[in-house]
Structures are given as structure tokens and as C-alpha cells.
Image 1: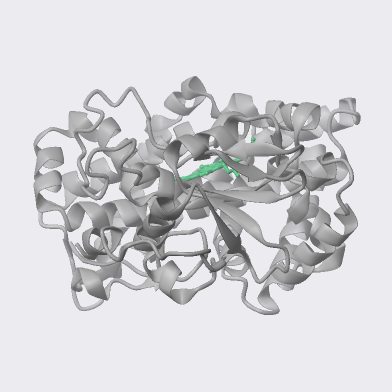
Image 2: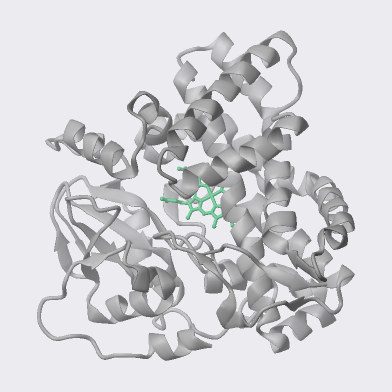
Amino acid sequence: DNRTNSTTGSAPAAGPAPTVDMMDPALMRDPFGGYARMREQAPLVRGSFFGRGTPIWLVTRYDDVKMVLGDPRFVNNPANVPGLDIENIREKEIEARGIPREYAQYVLDSVLDADGADHIRLRKLVSRTFTARRVAELRPRVEQITEGLLDRLAGTADDGVVDLMEHFAYPLPITVICELVGIPEQDRAQWREWGKALVTLQSGGMADALRDMVGHIHELIERRRVAPTADLLSGLIRTHDEDGDRLSDTEMVTLVLTLILAGHETTAHLIGNGTAALLTHPDQLALLRKDPGMMRGAVHELMRWCGPVQATRLRYAARDVEVGGMPVAKGEAVMAVLVGANHDPREFDHPERLDITREPDGRRENHVGFGHGLHYCLGAALARQEGEVAFEALLRRFPDLALAVRPEELERQMMPGSWRLARLPLRL
Ligand code: HEM
């Protein structure tokens, strides 16, 4: 495991550390080693993200990450920091991420960008759908979708090899979240393509995808208005039409967009990363095959060890504040590096080891792979369940499941703050 080497690799450099570019290919290739070195250097390290002019602080230690995400002196929306030049910040963001201007509101004003009462209002509109109880009720349906996909998996084999990402890891979560939200079956493959175009930030591709997605949601809203169903979208339309103060038009579209995008890409990569991790750790795999009752704890550990989201959105200091004893000035931006926290030896013994028995009864979730605090992942219960169902079914149905390439040949998608496989070639 080359992570072990890199985490214990070179000694911290003396003198002021250079600014870390999160787009640096070396860091994206080995985020575990890279962030470990920062974590040992200092509580805060200067970073830059997406080539933005403004420097940010990277926070990599477990306690500090939890503090930043849990402390109300940090806000998600820079507009809530008095005195900041918000227009300028927004302009830079639009430019750096190549967001088409007329659609910026749908990307920059989501529940993740809201603070205080606004945030609570938006989150409440959808949170009931994602409670542990509602998610548990959904389990039989998630199992059914899973079995259906696995029934067809062998048929996709090319020379005995299947790409699990393409034929299972992606289709499962997109199907589940689209069903929940109310996206018709025939449109789901299209959403998958749009999602891809957005996250890979293909030049030019993003503007089209965003325009099409927003257009499609508007169209669906009109259809559901005429013929409401039991889905989440129909519920939102009712709220909007009865009480426009609680949910504006743009907010409704943005909320739906956020749920679909947040709900499928991430979960797909939990399934991909998690499967690859188990297949490259035969001892852990054997434990889990022997006792599927360990699945809950195993998913917590896979989230800690190879969770797909490695850093959160920026947080802005609404006033001067200290993190790990170092000052952050009012208005400065901080990024919580979840992978740093999840591999911090201050919190986890031998963090580089994949050990599915860390939380044997699976009740406690000690990692921060789903974030922490008020913006803690709304879909965490759903994502965990999809992971549990997916791993259980894969292992049960394919006793000889194995990587079709050497572990070091697994191809990663290079995205800052994200840990993803481009493909996962397997032999069933
Ligand atoms: C927020 C990770 C699946 C919806 C977050 C955050 C993280 C995260 C780290 C916090 C970001 C921050 O504080 O800046 C993940 C991972 C997933 C996953 C690793 C899969 C393994 C899902 C699913 C949904 C979802 C299935 C579908 C409902 C959301 C939403 C937020 C969020 C709406 C924003 C919550 C808020 O701002 O209050 N997620 N997520 N996520 N996630 Fe997830």
C-alpha cells in the first residue's frame, strides 16, 4: 500500500511553507500523503483552489476540522460576513469555475451556501424524506434495484471484464435519488450524462448541461403541477404554490438540482472506492464475507479510509477567530480537509490501516466523511444504506469477485477535493 509510505514520508520543511495548489496533479494523485504532510506542518496551511486569486487556509487536523465545521463564527455564504466585497468574490467564483452567468444562481445559492434561518428553512423542506426511518422504509426498494442491476451485470462483460462504475456504482444511486425526487425513468440516463459534464468541468460542456438540467426541472414542475404524485418534487410544488414565502421558484429548482447531483456522484464513488478497498484487502474482505453483520461498521470504516469527498465547501470567518492556536482574520476563507481529519493519528490508531472492526457494532460514526455540524450531509443515511446494500449483494452474488487490473493500474479521476475511480474493471 503506497499510502503507508507517503504518509510517513518526508519530514516537514523548515521556514514558511509555500502555498499549496489543490489542483497540483501530485497532490490529486496522492492526497493521503500530501495532506498528511500539511497536517504535520501546521494547523493551518496556505492553499489555493481552482486558481482563485484569493488564498485560503487548509485545515487538516481532526479536532480543528470539527471545530471549523461546528463553530457559528464560520459561515458558508460570504455575504454573511459584514464588509466583504461579495460581488467581487462571486465574480471570481463564476470565472474560476466557468459557470455560465445566467445560471450562476442555481449553482451558487444552494442549501450549502445558506446560513442561519435561510439554511434551516431550506433544509427543513426536504429533510423529512431523508430521516433514518424514511430511509429504512426504502431499503427493500434499494435492494430490488440492486439485484436488478446485478442480474444484468454479467451480460455487460467484455472478455470477462466488467466496469463496475459504469454498470453498477453509477446506475444504483442515480436510480434511487431520481425515484425519490420524481425524475421519470426515461430521463435518468440523461441526468447521469449531465452530472458527468458538470463534475468533470469539461470546457463548454458545463454551460449546456446546466441549461438543460434547469430546463428539464422547470418542465417537470409544470407536468407535476397538472398531475401531482407522491414524490418529493410534487411536495415542493405544493409548498411553493401554497406559501411562496417559504420557497421561491429559483430555490425550488436549485434544491432539486442539488439533491440529484449531491445524491448520485458521491454515492457512486463510495461504492467504487469501497469495493476496490475491500478487494485489495483480502483479510478485511474475508472478515466481512464471514459475518455480513459487520457491514454497518465496515461502511463507516470505508467512508473514513476512502470516502469520496475529501474536502468541504469553503467556510468564511465572520469575525477574527483562532483555529488550532493560529489566527484566521475576519473574512478569510477556510477549507476543511476531511481526508486529513479522517487519517489523523491524533484521532485514529494506525489511520493508514483499513480495519472494518474499528466500530464493531456500527452504531458510532467517528469519521467526518459526511461533514459535521449544521451542514452535515443530508443524505448520509441514504448513502450508507446504498453502500451497505451494494457491498452485501456484490459479495454474496460473486464469491470470486476480483480486480481485473493490478491495484496500481486503477485509474483515478483527477478532481481536487475528490477521490474517485475513472473505471473499476472487475472479474465476476
Ligand atoms: C452535504 C458528503 C451523499 C445530499 C454533504 C457534505 C459532505 C457530504 C461532506 C458537507 C459539505 C460541507 O459541509 O461543505 C457526501 C458523501 C456522500 C453523500 C461522501 C456519499 C457517500 C449524499 C446523498 C444526498 C446528499 C445521497 C442526497 C440527498 C447532501 C446535501 C448536502 C450534503 C443536500 C447539503 C446539506 C446542507 O448544506 O445542510 N454531503 N454526501 N449527499 N449532502 Fe451529501
